[in-house]
Image (cartoon, rainbow, N blue to C red):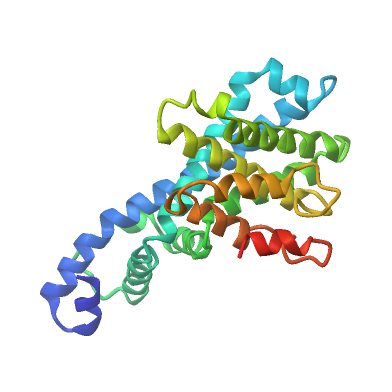
Length: 263
């Protein structure tokens, strides 16, 4: 309806249909945007619990497995959401139509109560959020970077070691038949892959040399190989996330064979 309404701005019936169809979608988009803010706060709280003294990150992951599982659940949701978002370009088209309609304020007699839910300021923030190729991942990357910046007394290694340990655990589970054969379904396999890619991306954003450097504590060649060994349909979005949302992939210090593996 939105396309027809744009093409026929004087057709009141089309305008009304388009408006009534887009409003519920905008409310749903707001819910996900608001949820991203809650995830941001939750992620920082979990990082604090999993990196604080006196225990090492490995000890934390062993002692607080429930918290580590929650951390993994957040990453799994984030990667899943962003995979779906990249496949639905209509999201931004619908939201653009909403913003144009609100700003012109042409439909004075329709359901403009929605402005109480999504006013112009909120619409601007949501627009910036959904303009990102991977908005949830961008939110978590910023949250992790802010966590490191704001906790100057906490050694950086506590955070990067936590992330690299989780990546290593996921890689071993995926590449070792003894473990992977126990996965009850393909969903468990996808869960493990998404968590692995998620922690790699967070590591790459907070470590000065990134995840792809030879000095990285993450075996990037091994992680990429594990992904490449899976059916292409299952990992296309994850490989794209590594290619397009990491910070250091194109650094000169990144070995050429790793860049080649991701091509």
